[in-house]
Image 1 (tube, rainbow over the protein chains, first blue to last red):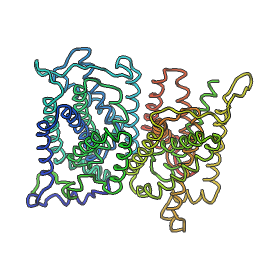
Image 2: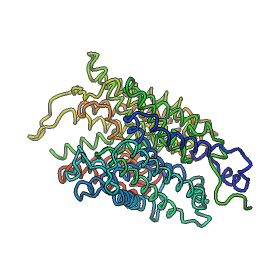
Image 3: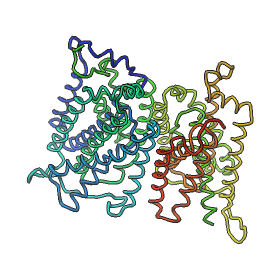
Image 4: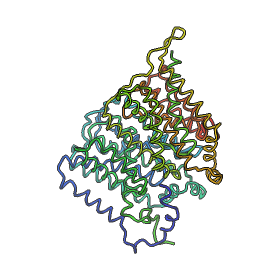
Length: 343
Length: 280
């Protein structure tokens, strides 16, 4: 998707005062937020549970959008951080009896961060600059390897994973699935979304966007390209870790698929479908794919994956900027960076 | 005995990787649908078998059917991706997803088996060798030699190499790089189809058959080195041999993972692979 957002668009947007224009992006964001906040009031309980799962997956999709959409690192192994955090908090709950939200969520974030730092550090840093293909292959292999190891490791429950994790607790209150969990998840989603949005519109985000568009040029400007990449990769791992630990407690069990290639590619589909590099695109892609999947799953369970594949192919061929590009102009999709108005 | 097992598995990996390597080296795109071409080859063989025709007929038909499909897909879809390797990866992944799910829909979640066209075993020096595995090794050697001769010795191979090395100059010299790319992609797909057809008696037929070979194939191509003919073959031989040999020493799960991790570490420190350089 490199060719869809030329660097000139990035630099042009700077300085042009955006306030005079009618901006679509904040309106989409607010609309999504309002729908998200009101949804549990109209949904039946079992649908709220499903919607909570989708929200957590949105959080996971955000983590992929950070690395691919904003920094141009193709990570086919996001599930490693998602799943390892899920397993980590499941073990905390099972073996140590720790379920307090104040402990398990930071632990999950930390696990995701640490794994991402290890994998990203290995793949991205070093004397030879890593090619995109190598990173894609390395992360994919990492995901496959973790899946295999978890399946074969008796301590982690082997094929069956770890069942019946006790619910997460806040003080003495038990957070079980339903509206309460829904609002917890949406709270985290909003906070993380805002943090990412702030980060991506900062000077750091500008450097990352430059990295995505033309890595060599950014290197010539004197940025330490590999360090930038490793930083954003680890941050995205932390977010995936948060999503993974929320997911583990919501579902009540973890299983090897959470680490595997299937989930890793699933998140790629979400983001590409919605539109990478916009943050809100990741959320919309996840919600649309999961909603249609839920809707079709009763009657068309068998052909749904085929339809998904065809849709994805069509999006890649004809709408490389994703669903969001139907609503957003190119200029707004790329966005402006730093403090606007100062020339 | 162990040596024979290892050699036959190595041959299977070489066969699978050859098509992948040719597409990656000659065209510079990583075809994520290659595993599904293997699956299709296996499926064609199965269809012919259930129709009551002999299995070997299916094995002959498979490369042509898959090659033709590869040609059509290249004309319609893959050709749009040449400018952008990442998009090519994602696009071919989507293609692979579609093929895999269609096959899954056709066979259900079942594990189907196809008998070996040549059964029995050969006894050499008091040891029994499965005839079919011997046949696989021989065919792999023949296909490898044939592909090499095609690329290195024929006028067609010369055009392919010219289009690889300098597409603009090749076009200026009157070579239709478009047609060459189509033919190369079809050839790579046909090799995958043949691989699928030959291995289906050894592995059973199931929808996720291709995934296993996809990662293995890519790792092998990267270890061997992109851009040459010898690279992917050498990489495939190494990865195939290791994958088959290590389970004799350590537990299969650890072995499976260890091969990939070692390979990634190797690529990290030698990105150009075992065989550096371009050409045949």
